[in-house]
Image 1 (cartoon, rainbow, N blue to C red):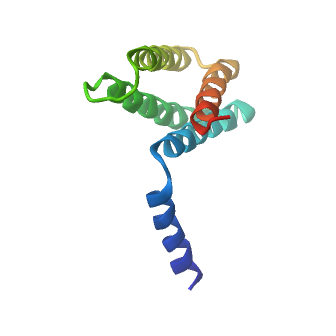
Image 2 (cartoon, rainbow, N blue to C red; image 1 turned 90 degrees about the vertical axis):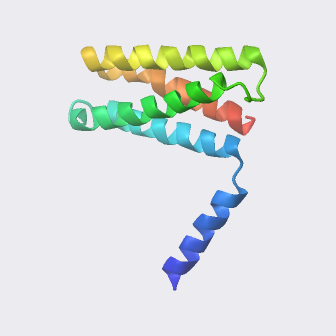
Length: 121
């Protein structure tokens, strides 16, 4: 019975949640994964690749979305998101080439700040 209620709630949440709220939640999830790796370093080294891959995939989706002709965002915002995406890709590459826990801080902070902006905070 409990599981049915939980599933119904999740389905309703998916319908009610706005795209901005979803994007914010995904950015916070990526930030939390990266923060966990950073906090538990070096014991979390095995989780690093998965956390970076999720973050990279998320930002890749954002970058593709802002390059579409039918994207309703103003050109300046689209360009800023694309630039941030390129920055994330470069930071990820550097992290994979020379892993250090403190390098994750910029990715965590960026995701959290963008997520907060999407939530209107």
